[in-house]
Image 1: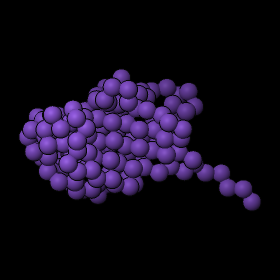
Image 2: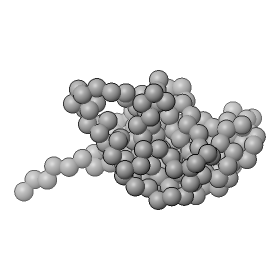
Image 3: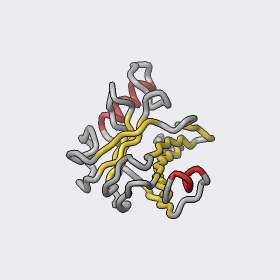
Length: 160
């Protein structure tokens, strides 16, 4: 018996830099790797529409964003945003992202010295301010970003 299935594996990578100079020199003081996340219903629907020519806004460089917030509320497939009430921020993709290498797609956003200076507990990728369809959501306490620090967030999805 043959089984058809699409598998995906997600990995979030958060790199922490003490300041802009350390970021420019690629000298992270900490790197955290977090496996897994939950695909959200609205993201699944958008992927289906894009796959079948149904249209909509893609998760490309010109519109995709990574969001971080301070809510520790468990991920549920029906959520449509980060769950933080006020401490949440979406940042556009870094230049050249997302990238595709083989069967791996990687999104990256850079949160500079004045961005998202609060406890980082939740993460998502959406397809821009106009569409705001969240692909996924991950809840994981990653510490508190301080003013002056730069942190980056990568989402890698391996498809098979």
